[in-house]
Length: 203
Image (tube, rainbow, N blue to C red; front, side, top):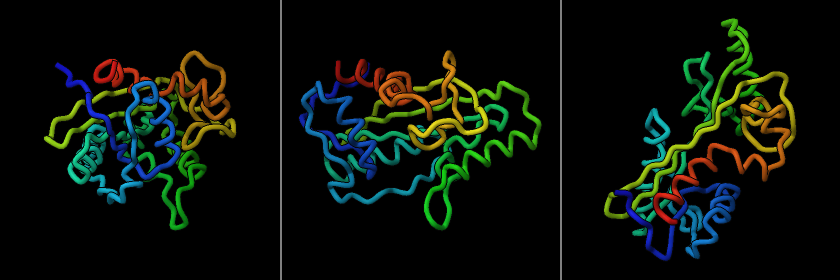
């Protein structure tokens, strides 16, 4: 039985303002006071797991324990089938440089790796998002979202972020990078996970 969320306040375990705003909008109908780990001055825990759910659990339980409040965390990334599911949980790591994250570099690396092994088209891939809602008593609920598609090249579009310009979702002729953000947010992996979260814990 899924535990219902009945508390008036929720910590979103992120220091990312964009992600916080997106989650605030999604949960607005439920009249919950939402604060971020960043606003509370909570430290960012080291993500040491090799799965999305493992890293989301680290972030959610760390924030719940430190704040004494329920906490919501997500971990997400892109999995490319021909690369054995890489970059997967290391999606952001592939973009790391001494001067910050460079996703053009990361997308180029994906393309070069696919070319190197001669991966045939379509180069199937998916975006995944795992949400973990954790309580201070150690209980948690897990929701997994995904959107299937393929990697394309060259990069297309200036919208979105991360690997969006090389991801063509199934049933569409434009990449996430070319898509209006409202349309993307309707079909994205995060939207899929949030529908399951709301149905399980909030509705």
